[in-house]
Amino acid sequence: MRSTQKNVKNSDRQTGQVQSGGLGSNLDVAAKALLGAGKKAGNAATGDKIDGTAASRDQLLARVMERLQVIGKVQKIEQAELQRPEQWKREVAKGEEGFHLPDPTRWHASAKLYRQAAQALSRGQLGRGAELLDQAQDAERAAFQSLPEMVSEQLKGESAPVGDAEAIRGHISPTAACPTSAVPAALLFEADKILSVTDRPENAAPLPRFGKWWQGLGAQEEEEEEEGAKGSGGAGKNA
Image: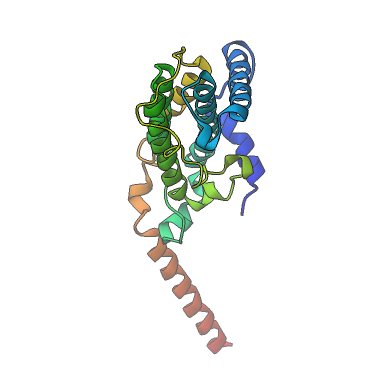
């Protein structure tokens, strides 16, 4: 099958992603700072030691940021695949196992929940933020499980779904509070970037014509193969 590395590189170019300079650079620095603060907080607030401190809040905000970056990368791969139907349309039309239409909007549900979790944490609602974070992780796992094969085959270790054992629920009271803070701008940017993607099979440029041939493609190829076999058999007899 095609080179996965090539597709990953193309996805950045096709989605117009900000790579460097201006706002993009500032947000990259802010994102790294948030993730770094979360790692430091993790040393003081992990597992059953999660409490109502600012360190606990920062740890969970860092988790949100980390997961948004992961699903954002996968969404870009899926968005790029949506623009290259010629590479997978036959597998989809034939109904091969694991092959179905790409849909970059599948990540909206988890991104929205991650955003809401960050907002709750920043309001000082530690328990509610943790609850929303778990819901977001559940939605993320479901989205990964529904990925078509041509997207899944391109994923690397850094783009893996959140683990089943990484739930926050059970470690923190639903009513637990923590100090308030501003919602990190870099985090909101990551979430809104995912939510702003509206590309779907029915509105992507190369795909409207699918309805004219989609159902009949597999049958057409079978007929052509049968005709070819008959022709070969006839040639053998004539010889």
